[in-house]
Amino acid sequence: MKKPPPLLAGALLALLTGVAAGLLLCQDGICRVIALDRTGLALFHALRSDGTDRLAAALTWAGSLALLLPVALARAAWLRRQQHPWQEAAFVPAALLGTTLLVHAVKLLVMRPRPDLFPTGLPLPPDLSFPSAHTAQVLALVLALWWQPGRPRPAAIWLAAGLALACAVAATRLHLQVHWPTDLIGGALMALIWVRALAGAMPGASRICGCGRYPGTTQSDPP
View 1 (tube, rainbow, N blue to C red):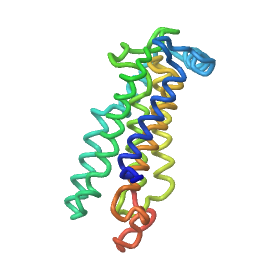
View 2 (tube, rainbow, N blue to C red; view 1 turned 180 degrees about the horizontal axis):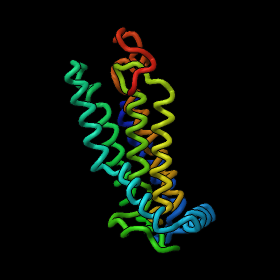
View 3 (cartoon, rainbow, N blue to C red; view 1 turned 45 degrees about the horizontal axis):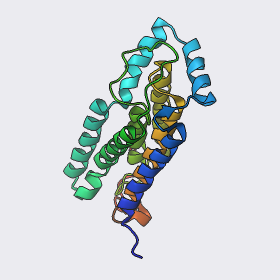
View 4 (cartoon, rainbow, N blue to C red; view 1 turned 90 degrees about the horizontal axis):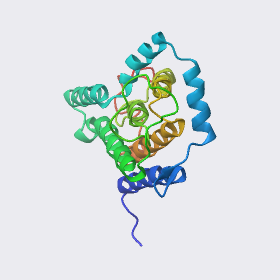
């Protein structure tokens, strides 16, 4: 039996992972509130104030496609200007947009409503809850920059900073009471699977860091 292309296999794995996780929470049109979700939202609700709500409402934009897509496109344009192959230049936008499409497909399949245990810190988004698109999108961008083909892998401090930002965005979704904790886990898993599959499908994937192709760069270069 012929194996599916790695990119298709990765997309299917990410999609099935999201659907399987969602079905553990929502079956026959009824979505359970597990202890992790209830406790997590209660903890963040206890920390809320007008000031923290305003801070969370501002920081949560770091996971929005409206902010992340221009960053990804600017990265692609810069790489093309540096005469990188178009596959390398398109990697970060493809990682981000692929994650967005997969996440919203799972939202429509799982149909999990937004939390309603506590008052929200902003108007509830019009789409469904599982998985978290903000969490998935910011993590996809961070991982794509880390696994960018044709470039030396950045120093670990850049990955740590990116992951800290992704965690901060995820925390804002809980603080604002617009996602369940399990939504964040589902979004993060889907982003990880898709971006890794995309990286593995790129030309020269066995040397994905691109070390040695551009001798003027070093391991401490920013992503």
